[in-house]
Image (cartoon, rainbow, N blue to C red; front, top):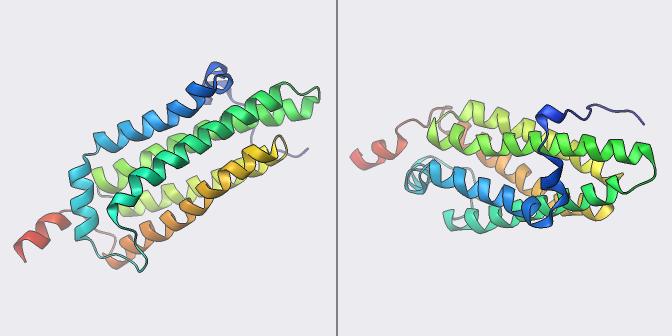
Amino acid sequence: CSTMTTYIPSLTLPEAVFANPAASILLPVGLGLGVGYSVSPKLAKKTYSAVKQPPYKPPPQVFGPAWTTLYALMGYAAHRSWTTGTASLNPATVQLTKQGATLFTIQLGLNLVWMPLFFGLQRPIEATADIVLLTGVTGYLTYVWSQVDSVAAWCMVPYLGWLSFATYLSAGVGYLNDWNIADKERETKSS
């Protein structure tokens, strides 16, 4: 069993979160909602509407339901992988489960940082670097979980698809706006 990462307790959510299905699902949903509202939905919507967008951009009202569903799926996957993996008699499976818990925590942190980077600080270069790293970590997490519980891994597939699309949107907006989206909502009002 080769490993790119290891279980790092100080970088991992408490085991009780993963062991409890409600906590495992509601934590990412609640944190996602909290970050979304802390950045100001009105500001995000104004910026989203004002910047030049790549083709196939979804309407803004799609993001809330999509992310809520994806957060719930990732939480369920985390719970399922944890409960399946820690019950295993195979020490390698238990170790993969713990590695997955660390990777899950890291990807959740990367996920939660994107919106403040992009909309709050209006830093599309950093936001795009974040989402590229997030997609890579999530891809590796899905691979790790596939060795623990195939259902948990499959629950991550829609999230990986959406992250790939979101990476395209983030990079596209950055590129089309010369990597500067600061004050775009004010520019459109005065022009």
